Image 1: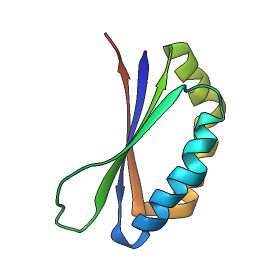
Image 2: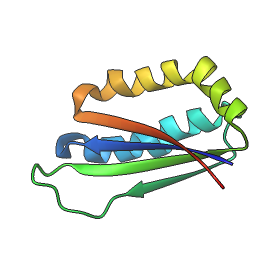
Image 3: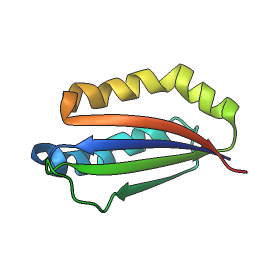
Image 4: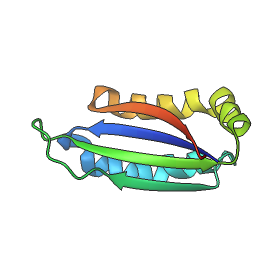
Length: 100
């Protein structure tokens, strides 16, 4: 199993909109690709000096081939929507993990 993990640092001025948009728009769009069979959405529990909050969205797929299909066909467009909406107020770090 492959875990696609996106951690996003979100500024306080967009936090409420960001959470709503992720739940109602973005996550459903990612799942509609048919690549991922499950997701989880978390808020990291820690204090930051600048008042920002980190969120983590995890998507699960069966194989690296499916993940590569997502990267090739969908990632650029879906990522661009987030960037366009929030610019530098939501900065993402992505990682891939493999279940062993």
